[in-house]
Length: 221
Image 1 (cartoon, rainbow, N blue to C red):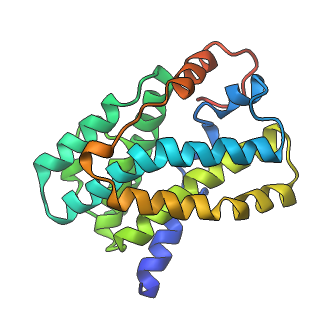
Image 2: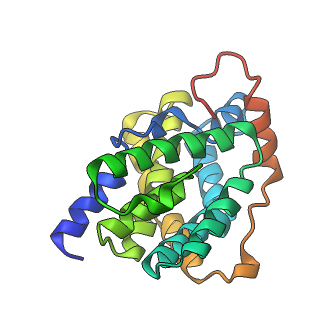
């Protein structure tokens, strides 16, 4: 991986990217409210399970396919994958999160002029906008996939740091401890066949729906 691609990846996988990722917890805030996550050990268990059962089985393999479709200039596949991801958002908050962050990243990509924006017409999801940035900047797909999973994990850890609460050192210790789960999720995503893909996570969906009416919440999902 050359220096330019690495620097581009660090920029677009950074939590400082102005697309609003810090304002979402993806159901974790309700898990905290319900006491399912209450310390470092339960936070590790929650995030590792989400990595294995949700990220590795649906979101990451779909991103992997989107990057390949864009590289092959397969517009039909890009459109279909984008629609499938949007349809998989089974609560209002999860759908709004992906669309809002996708819109913000697509707008940033367009304003920076780093890629052809033809694939970014209509209602754009976050994975599609991210894949377009990866394609436009010639970032290697394996590294881009790993960075995306790490960014998701880091955001979950930051929610725990703020809301469990965990100390900053405990948060970094948790992030280090999750490294094998991140690597495993990336490996599964690269090799999972189409028939193995699934976003089946009814417990997470229920927590996301409960979050819509949760009192005194800090996050938007």
